[in-house]
Image (cartoon, rainbow, N blue to C red):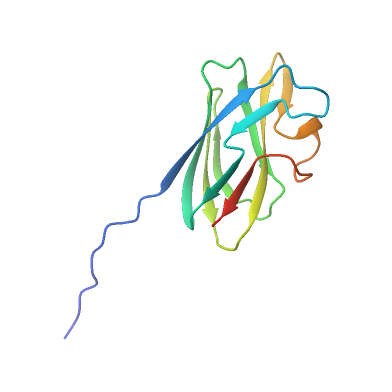
Length: 129
């Protein structure tokens, strides 16, 4: 006698919305691009991440980077007003640091304090739960 597999609803991906603001008054050594929330906790599995400008910020999104390999953000879609990516939480109690870069007045500005490389600490993170 054959048995049928139960048909269940596919689990919907969780979508996380993050806001991005440009701090044009940042002092030397401080991040010029701020992500809210700065530290995001996500559940297991695949999630959709969406970074949006707060109000009408005077910048255009440029890139999303991480030093983590393999890159947990894919595919990455960048437009001037919105940055989106899928994030795969493969498990483990990991905290992934990432960098968002924007263009403001023909200059690249970053979430990394002092504009240094990704992974030096101080940038926004995603924590696997």
